[in-house]
Image (cartoon, rainbow, N blue to C red; front, side, top):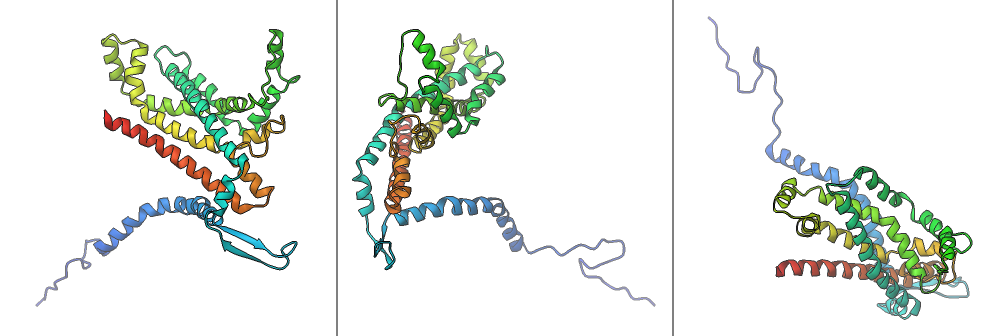
Length: 323
């Protein structure tokens, strides 16, 4: 007499592979929820360490002042909260206020010129009649690979009389431009910035142009639209997000102007140590040893960039809502 044994579901049985017990649904859900954080975690850690915390520390430094007692601080020091006193001192420096106005004038002129040239190059290289577009894209983008310090040195020698072939050629036709003079040195800097970043902005616009469906171009040709009409009615409206992006980047970059005038200052006396806001903050920190005023100046520059950038975005979005 034999007796049959019943096996519970999931138990081992002859001919049936052993299967692992399934994890509870809640645990699987938690594991899946943590996977994205594993990818973005390193970025968030570096962003917090290298960007967010320094901003908070600069903001903290702008509201305090370190008072030292004794001739060399040998009798001690204390940290006191000064409120907006550092900001008042920063705005009380005429050189700093002039530097802000100088870079705003720089941006009003240089940014539209640079983006206009980048737009023209992008449209020409993406036109149907463009020859060797890949070669010319690389050629125009090449200056962006040159460090700003090297570019400033290169153009600095091209601005110096007796060393510049540009000035020598201008002298042959009776012209004697002073490219490092008090009224022209700002635009000489603008020339360097335009030369450096026109290819970078051009590539952003070209990337947006490549997303336009070819059917739209075919429809425009069937309707008899020429190259200018196609550019005005199809390409420009569809690459507007890229134009807005490059404009915001250019506004922020204008207020960060530092390396180019700092290098050109060795070629001319018309660039002082507070020629731009960043140079003024650098002087306050490392020449005047007033780190708290330098922190206030840095915060003011950041706020100016924030207001101008979001003001531009608000203006663009307001025009879109009115349509």
